[in-house]
Image 1 (cartoon, rainbow, N blue to C red):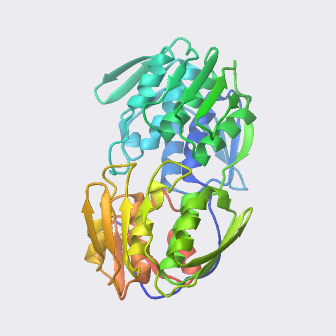
Image 2: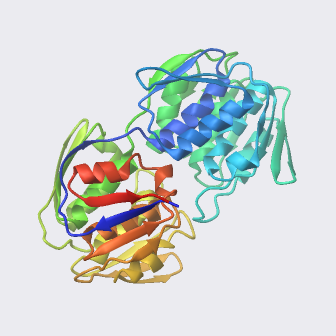
Image 3: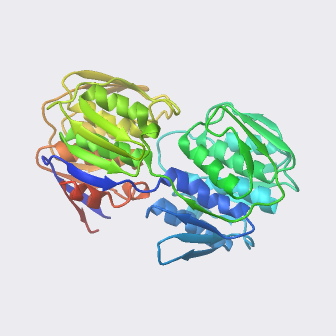
Length: 419
């Protein structure tokens, strides 16, 4: 199993370009199932989750081509198999995103109950209950979701809780449903609006994505399109946090700062100078030691849960005590035990982490438990004294494109060790 070896102490400096967003790309790949024509996606990041999603569509019979410009063309108009098998689904919860498109286009689907990061309950009942309201018949059998519908019907659906993949799944399903679907209490994450923009470019009629209510008027068919995957706001935020813990001075190109305003606000509170324009962010840490920053995670546009672990490291080396409240997932403090092994002083009580800043962290052998936990351990290694070895980095490869190469380009001493 591959590992990352980090020798801490180097201050990050330089410029990098943000990769395409995994959380935007995955539903967009799933949405190609809805089209009768070829769909070309550009700026796709090279990540394990992207590969898994392509393997999933390929196993169903989709044609997937990579051209000389590293763009992918997908044709899913004549799938031979509507089953998402467990061996593929078990590694990635986003596999559930093929459910809505399959039922809408082919009238049936058989999807293994999903796996992925072990960061808490992310129930699929929102997806299933909503599809039933649209006329689908749902059966849970032998670890699989079996769904069928002669023709989905438009419905007024209110989600009991905010769900990003649920919003995306039902929005995709509704594009080919009969009549109008109104979704309320939906996720407002930028990736939801990105998916709506892509679907509209294919001939869908979606209005309101990015707000609390989305209206979808069903159409007979969707066409092909060429669409660019937007930049990954969480990747950008992670590199900004890496600069914060190393007293760095970096610039990130290709990222819309409006998608990171809460993160930028908290970084400024920690002692950073940040300038930005419409597609770049410049960061310079002005404090030798970060100021502590209290955080409460919440759905967009509030502070993202996917940046909570990275800010745990910023607070761990801060000049005081900070509180972090995790309101999205009930099991997302698993990185804390590993950080404490490196000298952090963090205690957890339910969804509340109390972080007391220490003068130094120390390198250690640590083990990643999920995607963003992996990022926090790398950040801790960058600012720790001595060497840190991060194990189980297959988690990091699910969501960060060539992270060791980008960090090395910024001056970090980090290498990938072969298995």
